[in-house]
Length: 133
Image (cartoon, rainbow, N blue to C red):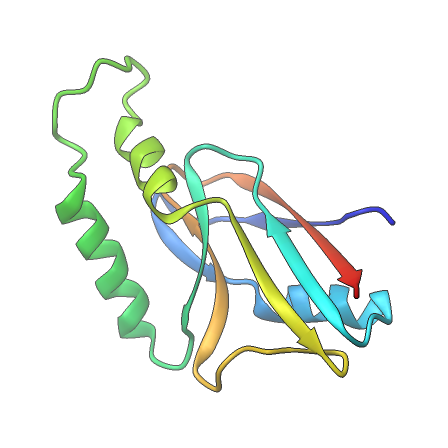
């Protein structure tokens, strides 16, 4: 079994992109009825999270809170100028697992899967593996 890859193009420096439907399409194509879906992001300045996808103000609040937690204007040793993005990615994480039951992700009614861009705009690869068990 191989992982499927989706590509997400971010438009601005920092944003949250809802990838729920793209992940759902990979699960549908896999034909797995019961198991789990593993989502992995092979990048160090972006992250994967699950959070509310009904009210866009939640995403804005998350991004503002992350900027307060790890400001861009702090002095860092890393000379590329994107240490804030690396730290935020480490805090949130680059992978998630979601149970699959009867061919459907077991997300709550308000939950969506997001790629969080901290150092864009960029093109990001996301690997998705659906495993039957």
